[in-house]
Image 1 (tube, rainbow, N blue to C red):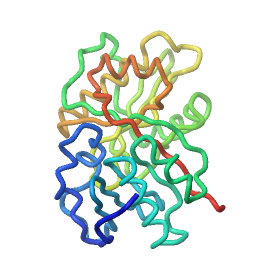
Image 2 (image 1 turned 180 degrees about the horizontal axis):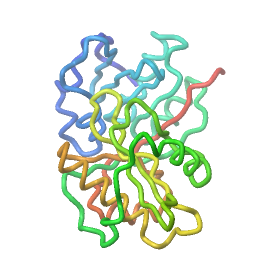
Image 3 (image 1 turned 180 degrees about the vertical axis):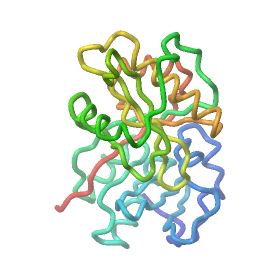
Length: 253
């Protein structure tokens, strides 16, 4: 895990052209090219990494051994400030030889630049404003307790939902943003547990994807690697699946 370039607040993440290579969409869409002055980033031979400082989370792309080397260097140079990481699949095992890596989870970072085929139930989807936040919070708590984004989150640009009889919420989802670039990220898509399998989640996901592509030119999302139904749905909607990642916490040895 040899690193050839020392870290710098102004390290240019795009000099190696990694963003053009398969498996590096997280860099292409997730890191701002404008090189924000406050961004702390690292460049190595075959990998780059950048820090989401408020969360203490390090993002990396590239060759797994090189990405692991950058993550290890960051953890040593900023002790206590790197509390977790997301990187190419295999980084967790390499880092585990040197750091206390806890709770690794395999993900796929997926993306599309194209509008999906129209779902017949998309006409039931509508935007949800601030007046719906209480209902959204209750719905997510009941049907998706581990949701990543909640109503009122500052990085959410849009909530959308499907309502049933009497205005009862039966599905919802949000467009959030990747932390460095601000690119649209679909998040917290949930369906009433009693109504799953009826296409409500597919309609909502299709609607949100179409909205993001029309407004921003792309849409991204995170998918758990072993979620087969989600994999089928996102593939049908045109999301690319070329970016296997792993996320984990860095614990105390």
